[in-house]
Length: 88
Image (cartoon, rainbow, N blue to C red; front, side):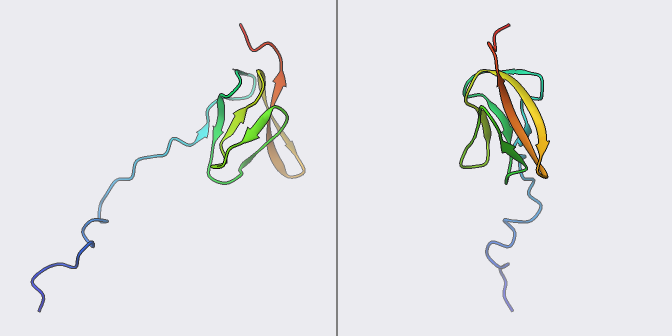
């Protein structure tokens, strides 16, 4: 009979995993500057539209200054940046 517990079994029990801070960071109608993150996501829940690019971890970020717009089309949800000054 073993007098030690199996190695590693205790390490994964009862640990609280820290949230990854995913979700929409800038909503429709809000102004955005070039390079600002609009959505952090796992997988392509939202797709990039005009003025938006997708990062390698599916993060959507603005390529141009303007106002964020959320649109639906072809069964997908798109995020766009409508060009404007972006300054108040």
